[in-house]
Image (cartoon, rainbow, N blue to C red):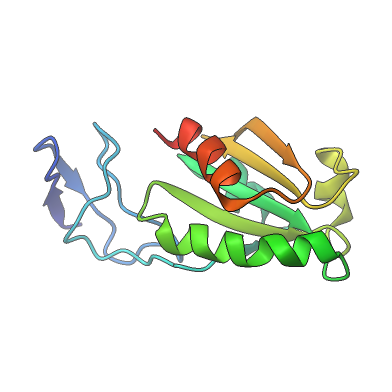
Length: 149
């Protein structure tokens, strides 16, 4: 494993040469994204299913914004481009994921999703915030930033 020095705090970190898809190498001490590390990042939201929920959300360190939506929902389609923009702007501070509640009823039921769109914010695998209904981008970004800092 190659060793990458964190530009923020100077800590030396071992980095996986072949990281899992959509994972960002972060400093073990300060949590800053490691530049120069070969990481597979995505500027698109990650699609989550009942089967991948645990791996993609609960076992992911840091902050994850999960958009619970359905393709027939008008307000969900309004929030969709906002999720794309937030994912493109993430720069390793957080991840954005999407869960189609029609195709994944187990996870939707587990988190008592009764209205869509519902956005769940997880930090280190624990649910820390919930936004219900279509929200403007500044409102979503403010709530997300409160947990990503």
